[in-house]
Image 1 (spheres, rainbow, N blue to C red):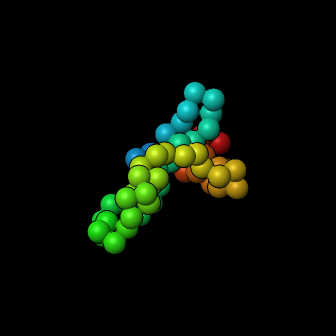
Image 2 (image 1 turned 180 degrees about the horizontal axis):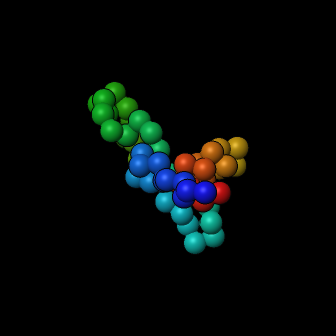
Image 3 (image 1 turned 90 degrees about the vertical axis):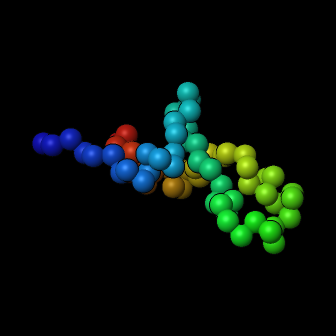
Length: 65
């Protein structure tokens, strides 16, 4: 059986943590920033983890399953 390829878009967007969780960046931080408040832009800067409901889908894209 052939190896499963990693999705190229997913490998650019997600990273694994030491404990096995998947890190992601927030959306809406790339353009049209003039109408967004300072607080909103600041809070979008921080990274977070992928929700438990989406974790299996992302792991499949990263060929971890």
